[in-house]
Image (cartoon, rainbow, N blue to C red):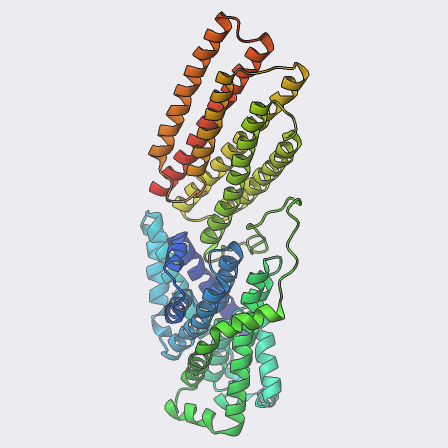
Length: 545
């Protein structure tokens, strides 16, 4: 093999991988958060789950990308472990589409695909069209790279040393290990199967040598999901184990079948003059058959992973932590991962829900503390406020990182809305602490409130808690008109209570210290209403865009 052939091989591999990545990025930018809406339609129906998994993987031509996406969905709570089983099974079927396309030998049209895709990007100004252009151009570049690799490996069929090496792969153990290792290195079974087909197309290797390498490639593709699961929740890690178990079980079954029966020869006979098609057919049969065999046992696979990776003792509630936002593969590489927007939005909204609950607890406790005139709840409220500040800081940092990677304008705007929601919730927490800290002055100055004032404080507490309950979903169900009505009521109450206070001052029913304190509390009360309205408006505006 000449040095020019090696350079051509590496260039072809580079174009192949870049084409796949270009398609993936184009799909992510085009789909964005709609990926979540597709998956929200999933039920416990295993057949629907398999179809969705196969469809998404066929579109992006990477089971690794789909599995990484599923790991993220499970980690963020968007999907249960039981649903993930069916998606992963479908992903293994969908990934075979690349091999079948290569077997069809449509490489002659590859330059046309590349031209059409690039033309859409260069000559049309619409950003949405650019995304589809990337998908089409990526497909063309993928096949151009495929043809380059196949041509570069032609001389290898005359190399006795290389032929002897390929012959060793007919040993099941060596073949499986070689396939698993190579696929783990390049982190794409579609790419590794494509390279295997390029070898076969150049006459270097036949199905009898390739079959065990092919089985190993299905195992090697799991490494990407394993890496993606580092630092995630237990259920997300279990998702990668399901992916591993699926391919290991399938490899064991098909290895035994190929050793004991002439199954490989039968697959060869289906397309005797096309070795690339033989490899593609074996790959498809492997994944469809394994899915059919394991489909009735999907729930048991989920239970087995729970046994392999049991639950850990729950994290102490007094330790500040992010419960839903966990590391996902967005920093290690420059590219965007499929479904990133959906994973991020769901995780952020779940964390914001925690902030809402904490803010509501603090508002409730603060008005109660002032009404009773005691500082007993002050430490608890302050500790909770520290937690709210921590969440605000960490969520804001996370959103900033996501927005840098975000390609879809609507999803970017949605992230911006979530960022503002986070800040408003933190401000509500600040005003709650302000109210609770008035208890120190109440105790120090021995301030007492009349029954009328205590009644007003109770009304403030009730309407604030009610308003916060309305935004507690932080989702599409927020009724901004209803929240606006409550905020308007808060403004009216504030105005009325100030008038009541002036009336009490005029007849000498209010001490100087009590008047100052109550006036400050009314300001905090009004500000809480303003920030709650801001939350509702931001979420409603983002949803309706």
